Length: 465
Ligand SMILES: Nc1ncnc2c1ncn2[C@@H]1O[C@H](COP(=O)(O)OP(=O)(O)O)[C@@H](O)[C@H]1O
Ligand SMILES: [Mg+2]
Image 1 (spheres, helix red, strand yellow):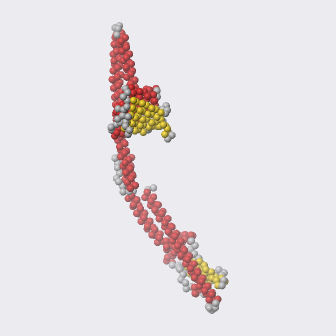
Image 2 (cartoon, rainbow, N blue to C red):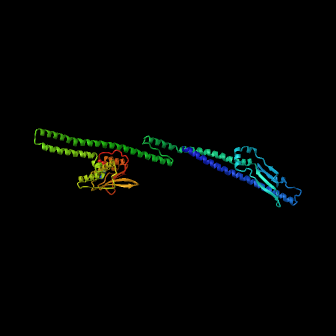
Image 3 (tube, protein in one colour):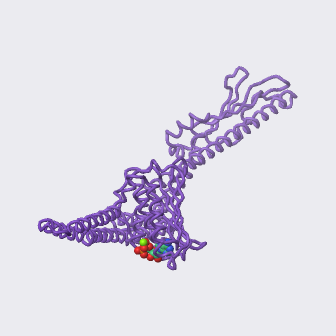
């Protein structure tokens, strides 16, 4: 339901409830006034008749007989009010009634009279016993015609109802105009959301006068701005990734061409020499065969290096931890003591899947290469541990060095270098978190965390940066 109609309905209900309560109070008050009038009149008439009895009893008015109704009829009666003198047997001996104002009685709706009579005893009778020297002589009974009391109540609440109806109409009109104006910016916000849903990330909302809507439009603008920058970063990342893949392919093609194809050609030429030497019965066959042997083993080394570049075989053969130890050993060998590389592992990594292991291996490989290229560090430590966290097993990986850090912290944070991109993409594929940058205590740190048990993984990116 729309807000305007919801408010209009609620306000109408509240005003009606107030009207009913007000009308109830007014009806109750008119009824009490009428009852009080009957009680007062019954008392006055009763006393008057008792005075009459006293005077007759003391022979002051000996010539009169009780009851002298003429004396008491001097009292003014309200419209619809009736007064009766009942004998001791309960039979009426005298009565007098005032008529109802026909014109005003005609204006009272029948349903109101019926409802009024159903709830309130409209006659509101009041009685007063008449006695002299403890001898009862009758009872004065005063009552109203129910139509008269209903008419009085109607006369009180009719103006109230008219006023309330007019008040309600004005209130609803003002409310709907105010709500329409207040909600005008909400339509703009809705239109903005639709534009955003259709991909218009440049859409921004103007400020609103209402502080709540203004806050919504501020949040909308901040969200669409960050969405736009995330989209452009994603596009840039995708472009870089495609570039990286191309570079990888070029690298493999160059490896195959420069190393393998060249060596195969040389092998081919040497085999031809061996054949012609053997045909001519020359003595150099043995040396040439030895050379052939050396070339083929050189070829095998090149091939193994290329295969390792594509996917380190030991991950599948030995498992992740031994492969990482081998990688660290290689780094130490290359560093020749200028940098010391260490690895610490904790926890059982057996359950890590093959794809996850390849991602971890490549991340460590890239981090170690970066440390050797950029850090100029004395110590580089790789730490890989499996820890329980909130009921799930998490893998934490850190590669920390004590080198020069990076002079360009900004550059690393927003780095579009393919090494950082590759590592970040791998961590995203592992549903993990990635942090890399200079450390406060000096040096450079990489921290990665991801769930040990991975659902179906995105295809692993092959090759290092
Ligand atoms: N261990 C490190 N110590 C200092 N700087 C680093 C380290 N690792 C990365 N960096 C910085 O981060 C940048 C981005 O790294 P990367 O994306 O791997 O690109 P590349 O290695 O090709 O320069 C590097 O150019 C370097 O400035
Ligand atoms: Mg790098």
